[in-house]
Length: 488
Image (cartoon, rainbow, N blue to C red; front, side, top):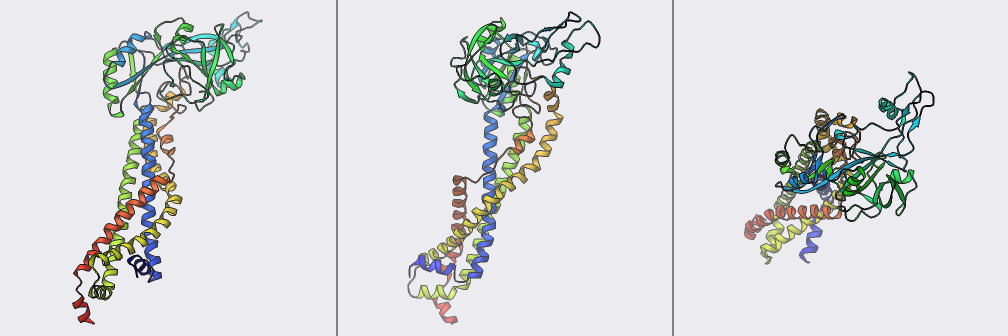
């Protein structure tokens, strides 16, 4: 009988014990695989965050952080200065515009006063936005809140005069690269980008909500300041308000605003999250505190990433512990089997079987048990990995959410959208931003069992099984046939 056949037969010699061993191994292996899946999922999320807005800084004009903020506008020369700072990989300048439908001004025939349908000039960071006219209709109605918040812009000669309905402006951003205002790549769902973002050209990217409201498709045209623009692509910012927006090239926006070389904001990308704090200080020093305010646009992400790193470390430790447990189980089982089969081993050695042949028999037997346990464990992991990952993450999300609230995320969410398509207010945050809170980031991690992760986990289990089986296999060399036969 071959060694392999004898090993398989021995594995099923005692079916009750085999079932019990496989069940225990399945639990240990299933837990190990579930922890490995959680570790991989969290690791992927951390990489995603570090590669996107987690390493960006936002530069605004000094004093331009409020409704009535002042300060001098940024310039392209200052963008070049920021780009020369160590650890800065890119600097993208933006120019904020707000497009107001050309026919929104109405005259009150009773009082003779003009009712302005849009917000006043101090809209956005430091009042840096310029208002220009368009034939587009906003995709978002003002509603009760919009009319209430904008009521200060209405002038009437008689107290109690009914104010006309207001319309929200359309956010427009001149951009120097194919990214949004957080530095993340634009999600263009149809068409293409603007091509050369350093050239003034009458092309635009339009948000899905705005395109649907105005029946625009790729190749359609609309006007801004009586200039005809062609829709080159349609993007999805993820929210209705964020998609009530237009992107044009930076030079084109500067031309429309009649402010050449001026920037509303700058998006500075740092080469790694570890260098963000030092680079922030260096950029601030290079530009001067009287010229620019440098902030980490998504500061709350540090807390999120820290929590995710904790989950990642916990899951890795749990994976190693579960793997070690499986190895100990195999070791104990094999030691027990070697002791039970001393007579059989002695007889095999007496008829000329080599130690390595006998040892291989026990290794193969342990691998048969591990293979059965791995099959059941993989099923357990596929069913339990999501729940285990959620349990680990939820234990960290409460603390993260509390820290984020203390940092003022809710206040930012209450600010006007300004030049942040898809955002919830000033750069950095609030509930409406693309990454509205650390707790949302934590709960957005999805753990799924991929074939690659599963294969890697099972390979690690088999490696531990071989190590665990080798120790008792080596014990067979200490068994002398003469001692076994004498005992008989």
